[in-house]
Image (cartoon, rainbow, N blue to C red; front, top):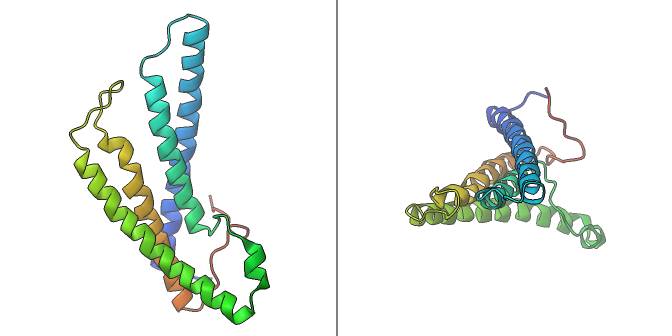
Length: 171
């Protein structure tokens, strides 16, 4: 099937996001190991590692959530969905696509406001602007908004929804 330009862009963004989350995971592992080793072996903990790990896990979780959003992989209560008549189920599935996209767009705007308002606050251990950790919100939710627009376009064209069970990232 020939993919749309937006579909190709979303696939590229998803692959880059996946690589970034894997890098976050590897860096967090190394820093956590360094922290534990320094604390319990050398009795001299790193002063900045806990704050770094806290901020990194937020970025990791939100970027991972954006990937799940693209793949329609978020949890859902399927027992109620399966009990519904087919027409009502399809209608509600379509409504959820539009409402989810609207919601993530609103969170993107609110997150951007949060980043702007925290620009001058400095973190105690790392000495960076608090806007950097908070930037995970608008960045991740912006990605979700783009993916939501892709879902809406697919819905309008009558294409089946993207499904995490049937998707593969092409190398």
